[in-house]
Image (tube, rainbow, N blue to C red; front, top):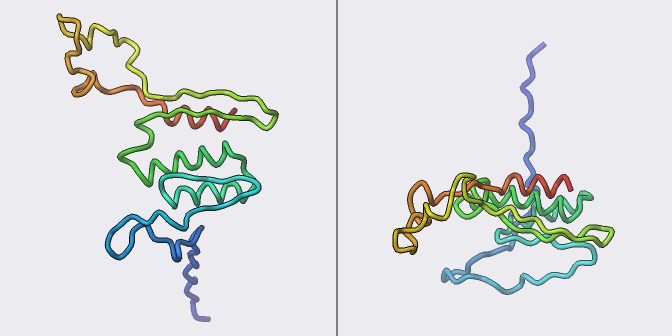
Length: 151
């Protein structure tokens, strides 16, 4: 018998962007026609595709924290220069039982950093917070997102 060739899998996008435009024919940003209503939940992000990730998580039974965490990681892929593992964030979370908690997972200075590293003899900023090795912080994004996911 002749050998059969395996069929190529059919790839179906997780969401449709049909009819969605970010700019018009003149290059102007489109900001109309984006209003929505929901009875359960809404997922919203600065990128349409990231919002779709959150919406899909909610549609599959996930909660708001599940959607927010998934969107946080998706945003790192969609906007790598403005979001992601090298950064941090803040979140106010309201639980199903009505409790609330705040998560601060912003970048922090290295453990051994002291204020005098960033001040000149005159007591004013020496610019080290803006450029060079002393300007970098320890990222908190991944730890914060995973903390929320486990909470």
